[in-house]
Image (cartoon, rainbow, N blue to C red; front, side, top):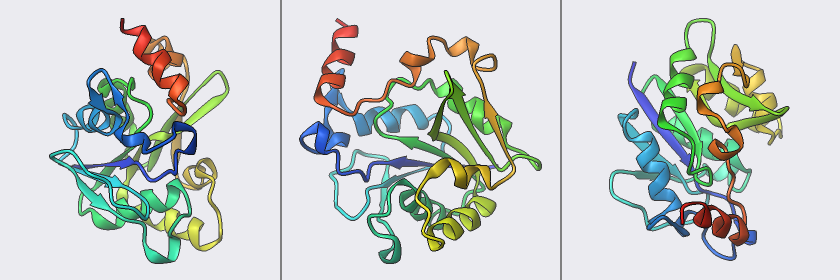
Length: 198
């Protein structure tokens, strides 16, 4: 089944003191890192940029939040992507986790099936809902329903579908998971990640 990737880049990123998706790491923007992570798996790459215009790298297309859900957080961005695509499966990836292995994203996709419409991971009791795989048709219904009901948290929405959560045992080959899921929210995070490579 064909795959769409939805890169979430709609947050205000005030702690990054500017546009987080455009911050540089290892000579590329965080948005370019995300694009390159999903490119081997995706037939289409969409960037959910919220309510603003971002300069986008080659190979991706913007999807703004629907007017009715503008500014409602990551679920609004996910829905924008789900309603824009004609593909059967989707990868959801936040733009601030540049170390997620493409092979881990592939594992999430392969977990989907008739009895699993949503797959994400958890390590050290910490869920990672913005690194996920979805069956598009049921996810579109679930996400729209959540937003219409005023919900904004991602995990309860994912859990409302037939789902699997991959834990540390199933993700052992991607250890250390703290590095794989390193979340860059501040300039200090970005600097720390840059120093790891020096």
